[in-house]
Length: 95
Image (tube, rainbow, N blue to C red):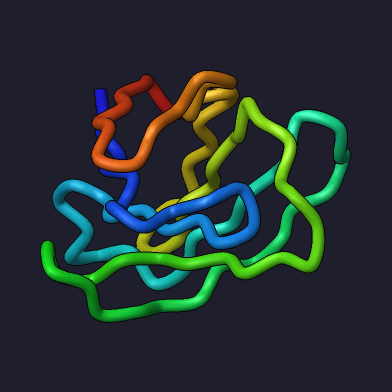
């Protein structure tokens, strides 16, 4: 099981997560509930270390699936729930 920490200051248009044990991760992508496609996030330095951020011109629609890439690619379906909150820790099993 892997966990994602939603950064404080995240909003429906500015979403940022830190990935626990992210040393081998080189990319994180987000899929909105209403979308069938992945949107790349960009790296950013936050208070808890390396984070991945997505700035959107529209409110993002949860739940969110996340895909991490590095040595392997892993998909976490609906790991960030519809009632997510900044400062929340959300865990899931990837495939």
